[in-house]
Length: 393
Image (cartoon, rainbow, N blue to C red; front, side):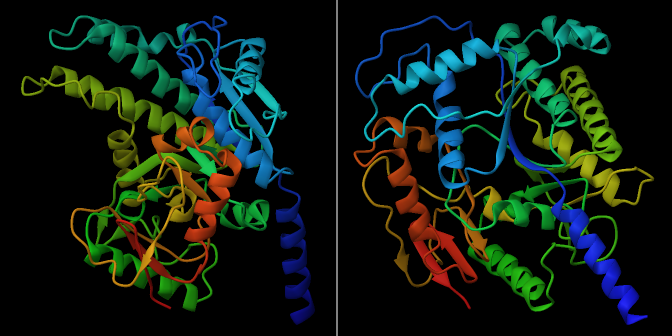
């Protein structure tokens, strides 16, 4: 009996090892690229939409060269390569060179093919208080990004926003495979951008309990939503990083999120109490609604779980240049975002990281290495807040 169980475990491990792993980005709704002169170390306006993507892809390919990559875009592949080459010619300090950043550049399906959205577009266009052009571009971008998730070319995919950088960590592919026990995983809002020290301590307690139970795949808790429905309340989820397991379940999830997005904003636009468009188009509210429905025990064919905050670190205030310094001691400070990590930070997420490519005197790669080195100097259970780190165990 034991030999049979051991054999099954070996077969399962071999099957997991055979799963292809990759990282994908979406960059769409970019104005048609026109070549523009580039002053040394300066990002011209025509290249600005592409600059964060290049920074993210460079750090991944530098620190994890074996990991495959894909880019979904509505721009021609030649335009993508031209933009990457022109950014290289900007002459940023210690630029790593013209790397082959994307193993696959995948054409986004035409938005016009989504005939079901014709009436929705008319509703947005005819609304009295919104700016149609700006808002509709945001809608299109979000909707097509969702659709892209169902077309990822890898068995296991980490889909990330382009304003990210990757840390030099060990065994990224193996770690992503180990987490791919659910159709989709997202980082809960409280883990990515916690609002209180007490909440960070509570999150650290859950991380400690998971580690002590040998829970390396984040399956703690019973029911349809492990690690998501704390105190019976489904948390908001961050859409900036998603771990995806390819298959029919992923197709079903994308259909559910897409449908919830259209339904949510169709209802919002019809509400007489609604009159602001600053948050119009955000994908988190519909994602939370989809997660809540699944967590209530629906008969959906897809599963959802939490992704560790290590893959979407959003609670830092990084310097544009110079060293990231973290003071050790209590992280119980005011006016801050809080986060808890157990293990190394893998993906840092902020609009600031673009400037490490164009403004850091040590260059993008070295600046990223230094910041990640400080974050992961002690990778035990720890809390971060406003430039402070408190190691708990």
